[in-house]
Picture 1 (cartoon, rainbow, N blue to C red):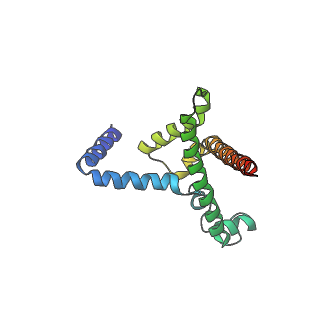
Picture 2 (picture 1 turned 120 degrees about the horizontal axis):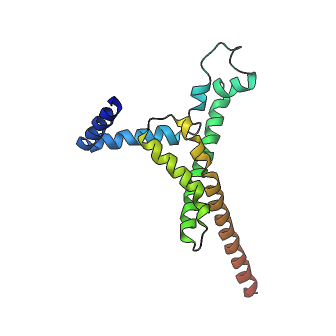
Picture 3 (picture 1 turned 30 degrees about the vertical axis):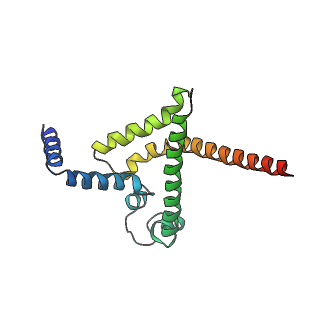
Length: 163
């Protein structure tokens, strides 16, 4: 019963101050979905004496200079994944006669997104839903590369016709 009262209080506060609601959900989404490590580097190891936390390789990625390189690479990967998935969804919805079951990875992602929008969570719990975007992103990239190949072939044919 106390949880329901807390939810009602929060909803009432959001209704009274939409600016705070925007601020709250912006920070919530950023915390859950924008950290390319999904809090794995903060949550898995605690600051321990040098010889006690994992092996030397894992310590380098958790505590050493390699951590910044890893985060930079994961950030690039996450941005490409999200953009490619957006492209995949856009292209999928534009194409006629798609099989409904092909939408399953997107449905899984959206279910997790909306669930964790209202439920308290940590970034590491959204990882399975991010993984479900990989086939959607792959579809988007495949279609993009097909279009690029088609444009190149068309340009080559036009160039040959000019001779």
